[in-house]
Length: 605
Image (cartoon, rainbow, N blue to C red):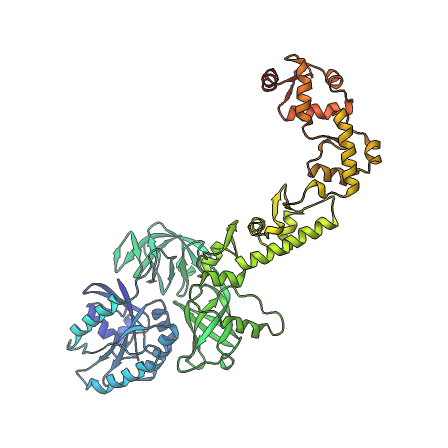
């Protein structure tokens, strides 16, 4: 299916033409038929060569321009209607301005009432006007909705137009702008809209924005028939479970959960509809029209053709979205726009607007994953995708779902090397920086990003994370201060003669080994700590098991162990507790100790 909207001045025969093409009545309200003019959106469809074409019939009267914009906003193509007997009219111009601002480039020109007046003058005028606009030259047909003349040619031209429209992506995230909401007895609330891409299926959970409410698809119709799933482009009616009619209105939007960001601030590039536009000439308060929504917006110029918009209502927008700004007071289209950034940084400092304008000059509005990552330096993968930024191929391996720009990662790696080196020089007994401190110093949003930075640290001073700290890989115990190395050597000599005679507080103090110094030797792997103030050489546990193996498979007391190990109760108690915790020994019911079967098998072997 393809969906085509009508456009053109009031009473130029848009609805009559849709009726003639489809055999259906697009004007839904009795008031519309009584007055002979469309005042709300109408819908009809027909089969053409190659497939189904649905029409969104929009009002042409100037009082209903907002309704017209809600109809054409999500639609990929337009059937522009001009009456032969009146030619180009004021609302023809406003509709063309709107289509130009929205970036609509696919369409067909239809001159109606060719049975009442020579269509050539109106056709020539409309062709020239369209050709001078961003829409450019369009194929054209002259018809009569009354006599049927030219309708076959129009059907053929519409079929060709539909066949040439860009193919929608069925795998993309759903964004369905609501253009109508009503209640059906026995079913509940139903909303309609044009699904531009993606798939909506029965049972799907969607988010209704801007409220953020989760809703479930209870029923689904397309072209008046129940369906299990609808694939864009399609006109759909969605029956939503658990939603009152009063809680949904035109301009609301149904989106895939977790895949969209709502924004109240965005940076945009402005597009003039009849020549260049200057942001400083725009009123401060305008109305933003996008999809089927119309939202009050405050305009802050950032440069000649860039501006920051602050919206009264948050909308799910992405980079590259097209929209327009309308001045309701002067009843004119003020500007078209392309969304460039849906998460812009605050403008707090003097001159920040000018700097931001210079930066935006390099934004294209097209999907540029690497460029977005480069500009933001660090961003979560899901957030970048929700912005419309895609997934960069050159990001540093992600940490916790976060992406890091390679150039920024290299700068942070150099910075981290300096931080660790300076810390080690200032605190030789406490080498390495805690991971949490490194994350804070580098202003990274997730600790796993520190690991990502470590992967590209300079080879001359590589870093590694272990035991909750970032260390220089080349840091070794020999880098300990001279007095600490001498105290270590003395302590090693003492313990080599009697490995379980842990030095007492007096001996440690005499060697200059306080709490910080002992901790440094433990971190360096020179000692093991079995209790506060009690240290032994690495491997003391295995040595103790070999000594205790003399008891065989019988129980032994703490006193017997103390004697066998040639140590004091002060050392024997925590050492046996350590052996028990490691599974080398076990406590017996009477409070004694014995080697485990694992250790007995080892010692006998």
